[in-house]
Amino acid sequence: MKYLEPSELQKLLQVAAKSKRNTAMILLSYRHGLRASEVCGLTLEDVDEANGRLIVTARKTRRKGGTKFYESFRPKDSFGVSDLAAIHSWLKERAMKPGADSSNALFLSREGGGILAHSWSLAFKIMARQAGLPKEKTHPHCIRHSTAMTMVDRGVPLHIVSGIMRHASLASLSPYVVPSQQSIDAAAIRAFSK
Image (cartoon, rainbow, N blue to C red; front, side, top):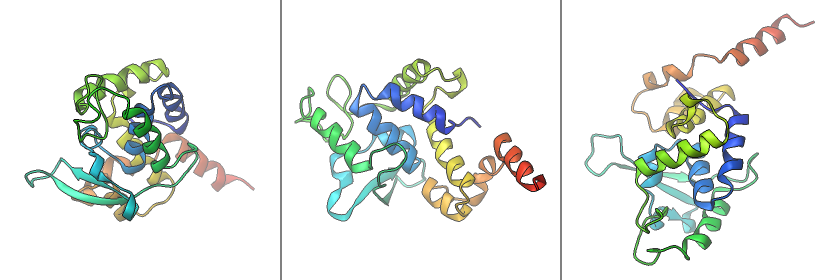
């Protein structure tokens, strides 16, 4: 399982900073564990500011049309911007894009319609290469893995991680509970120090 270390995610965001859309897509994907289809499927109505939440339609489900999840907006963090600030920054730029008035998609393609998951994957791959990430970490699904690994490393209970990742079963978390070499080394140093 490939995921981005915090330093790699920071490098990716530095490259993405040229584009308000890409920055917002990466941040929302990371903070909410979104699949490419989920971030690309967001609409303007999914930004529910009145209730302080993002409405995510999980596409990997047996229900036709997906399942809706209501997730609180994430506050400003180590990346220096909240979900809403990233979205608002993009919306100002979005208003000047072709097709902005005729599309309900939150994230637009260059042509003006909603960006497709395939197009997002290609854009992500270009940014990841520019950020110097290894080839195996140039797919947007690595962000989703990074979300789970960050939460597990920070001691978030697995049932909560499972809920945030929108997994149907705790068994789906098994790839994330294998400790990283850094975690193993840090624990061993703490255990044998003094």
